[in-house]
Image 1 (cartoon, rainbow, N blue to C red):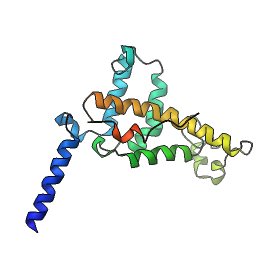
Image 2 (spheres, helix red, strand yellow; image 1 turned 90 degrees about the horizontal axis):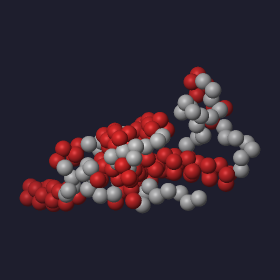
Image 3 (cartoon, helix red, strand yellow; image 1 turned 135 degrees about the vertical axis):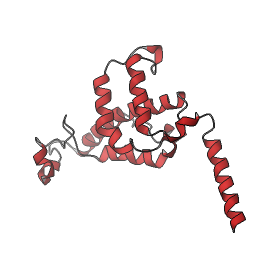
Image 4 (cartoon, rainbow, N blue to C red; image 1 turned 90 degrees about the vertical axis):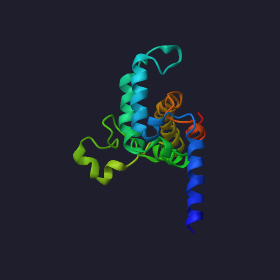
Length: 174
């Protein structure tokens, strides 16, 4: 039994080394928050962008990351990100209630109203197809900087490949 367990550990370590090949040693314990911080820093000075120009909408980028991405994915280790986690994140964005600018459900005007069940109601005048289209568009706006940050992490050798999000975080059509 001990020999079989040791053999299994050796196989696991070998597969882990293959998966992390090309990743810098100190990057193996980095979290998504670290990759997002690196991307924001590169966004400010233009290092992580095509053409080397600094980003124009830093406030919007930081808001998207603070409200949507960091609370749900920030504590994940980069090496633990997989397609299942990212697909669930993307689906949760589409199914989440409409939010106002402060991050509360749209019908809630104050934090005290957030627990009120009437705050969660959808707009009655919108048909279901239009509601889904709007939520998918919102999900695309949130996924875009996340993909950019993860691609920046690959180029910074924090991740070995983009296989986990290449398909899982494809934008919705339309």
